[in-house]
Length: 351
Image (cartoon, rainbow, N blue to C red; front, top):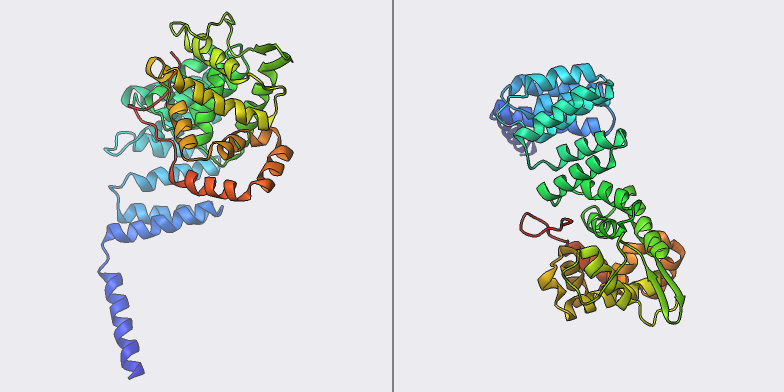
């Protein structure tokens, strides 16, 4: 009985193998190739990708992955040859032009890289990654205004793509208009929650708060997040940074004697209360503040604010977390299921 059952299972197994289509076999090889590539076994991966390509010659994916493998091997000329052959494939995406431009850039041909990104943008005008690459090329030439143009164009075109927010944040927080860096940076952290860049931006936001808010005395406060510091809390016709952010922030600091992670938590919470109590969401809607309101209504504003600022004062954060373990864990559970949602109808872009 055991031998008969074994024989039956053996027959079913081989029947399933032989009933696979070439496309299915190619997919299995391609899947294994990607796993090998992730483990650093590039040459083994290339062998499987070649086999997959032979089995399914119409697929865009296998030659694209081969080009990526050659990039990992730093054989950029071979990667370029492959990418040029599939440039007119029906399934081509903006990522091909990103990789192709990167290959030219790695080879020291920045002019050809730029031409490639521009060509890609003509075909994929809503590409976040191609705007990112154009911005990076401008950054390399110290053309920061042009770089910001591309980063913000990328934010506008693809609001859920995090990297353009990252670079826009760094540029604005190193300028006299930090307000935009504060907003872009927090949006970035919500989109890319757990990476070395998230750590960097958390610290940058914390430090910018510390540097630009000064409690000079019981009756004197200095707030400087925008070039024009002539502010009026009730004049909503002024640009956002001058007319909204700084005045509301100043009102939020009332009664605060010192600026640190815990008092910034109170300031940020006050900010949302004031912003909505004055109906500023009607004149200056902001997707980030709307999300903060959602966080607050869910009862997680304290934990969220400490998460945003944690890398600027890790000791202070750990002290708070130790005293608020239950609050922190409930926030994490909620946060996982309630990410910020950005699209063409729900996004923030500097005026």
